[in-house]
Length: 164
Image 1 (tube, one colour):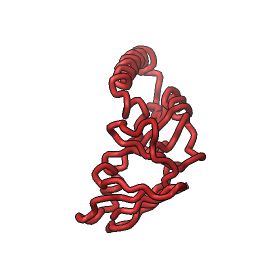
Image 2: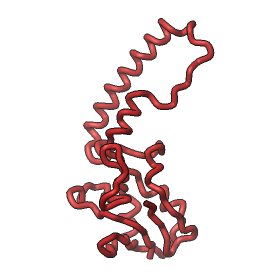
Image 3: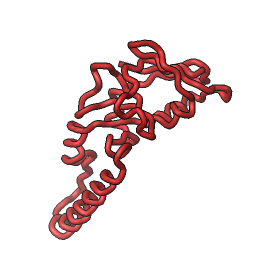
Image 4: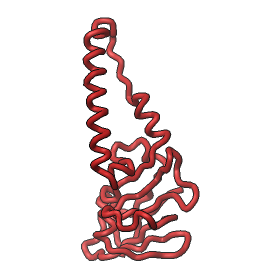
């Protein structure tokens, strides 16, 4: 379940979407397509964090020795197990260093090949997990344009991205 970026690039790379769940660059579906809803949830979560921190300082500050470092909170773990996540494609394209002449990209899928502009590809996101599970059917990734124009009909089953 990998995706290759190749073609007219300096460094062909292989992406493994199954490990992106641990990547800090991942975004939820709401963060990408409903930013106002995601912002309200973040503000509510920040308020809970402030209250929790204050309580911890007042009650437990002198009892904890050495300090405990928890990498993933329970709420974050639940979100990972139930969330739908997307990954921006731009950092990976930047790493592969496409040639300056690249104007389009061919997305090789199970059903054939679709061509889109390189600029549109750079501003796209890849769906890699739905309800906390990697995409098995029509996977490993689905491509959504950042403007949401293909939200109801994403490009599914992408196996390879060939820069032309």
